[in-house]
Amino acid sequence: MANFIQRFPLSRFDELVPLLLRCFPDFWEVRLARGMRSFPYDLRLFCAVLDGRRIGTVGIHEYRFLLDGSVTACGGLCDVGVDPAFRGRGYAGKLQEFALADCREHYPSCPMMPLYTDKPGVYLSRAWRPCEPDRTREIRTEDFPKRNAFRPDAGESALDVLRGKRPARNDTEKTLRRIQRIYSRGVSFNGKCVRSPKTWLELFADPEHEWVLEDRTYFLYRKDRLLEAYSTDPAHPVNAFLPVQGGHDANKIMVNLQADGTKIMKRIAELLERKQLCFPIADTF
Image (cartoon, rainbow, N blue to C red; front, side, top):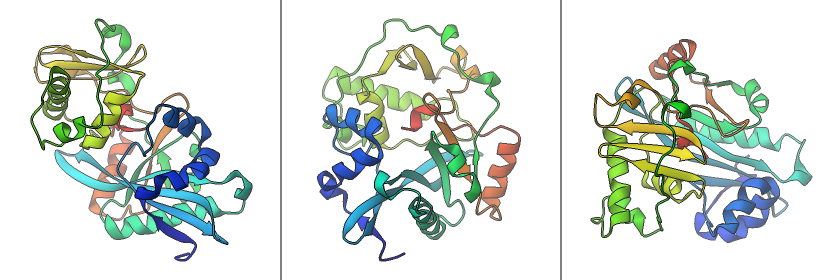
């Protein structure tokens, strides 16, 4: 397996485009048409190579989230794809097992979660299970209808601002930083993600995302659907709600419990049983 699956340098992304288009045409055709020639998150990418030909991919991106008030790091499984001409031969399973083994080494307390997929049945046999929290507190668009929404013109240069490497230079960059700060200081819950600058830039750059910014509160909509809202005002009504959980359309969030003997995984299993673990939709792509 070590020879079959090889690390792929992201600096050679263009070489991978034909395979990505064969594996994930709906996602990558749209993304490339928008001029976005990169993955939507920081990741370590691996390729399955057979007779000198790249036939599949698997990615691992570090996913950091709150668990009982502390930050927990794990590996997130992503971009498991096999060239359609080579499907049905067990390669997807080998890629997944490779990623799981890698995460057991790098994140022994919490190896791998979550997974974002529209084919949850494919993963059930490998200790994955849907993450389905109590949705009674999920935020509803009708409670906070969209008003005066805007789309920030966020380019790659804004990454340095989001990373805190330089001060904001214009109104747009100041707005991005305000939203970023409101999120970090807003309501906390088990599953709230510690977003990377790359994730923030993706959220701001998505043409289907629209924002409403108040004094100490923001709202994020996908078209007309409210995905999340955070406020640093304890009395603001949005603090009574949780962000939308799940995925776009038929996509689901799943977690892997292979390391359920660890203290952290036992706690996660307990929260899942109680439906008290919520990964927000805006942190998945």
